[in-house]
Length: 282
Ligand SMILES: [Zn+2]
Image (cartoon, rainbow, N blue to C red; front, top):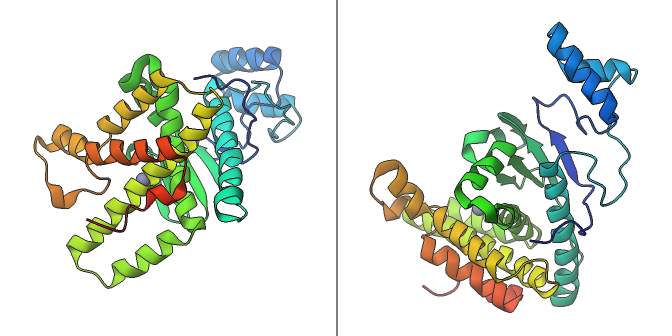
């Protein structure tokens, strides 16, 4: 995946390390960081606090020049992918719906975080909160993806971000609200079925994004294979087998691996929102 030239989004909020340090250590020089870390090791003080003192007060977010990886690779990568989803969805909204896309914010966190949807935990994986229009991404999830996807981890990670952004697109289009309303007057099986359809649509929307990245040669066949592989591995049937040793179809919330791959591919091939109607038909 060739992401180094992508525009970096300014909608990423860095809340790693317990929420105290927006922007991380972006404002410090390398020398300053080394001094702070060494001093921290010697005196047993948090290096961030030392950096903060060195800079005269709070560690402020650094003004960033585009495309310059001042921060760590992971957050730089997230900014690049989120930026690309912003450009792609702005274009798709304009061309296919004659509408304006409002980009979501993305919050990086570690361990746990307070969202308008409640407490997010690292173990629960990335999620989207419609109440505050934010995607929440825990960086330990990234490391987990790396362990699963290996060398192809980049696109697998991008796919995870694109899936959450897909939920934001559903929110923008009013789909999630409609589905939630329907769910309040449905029986348990229908509630679950609707949730699965929402999830599959987010996969299809991730595919729509993939269509336009493939068009610009940012991803290639190998990346797509890796993404499909990841979709297979994070399908509910796979996860359930792993955790319980058997599959309970009624408890599915994301759809089977096969369904996920199929809807992702549909979006990927067509690049068309209308191809992502997971709600009509069986
Ligand atoms: Zn989802």
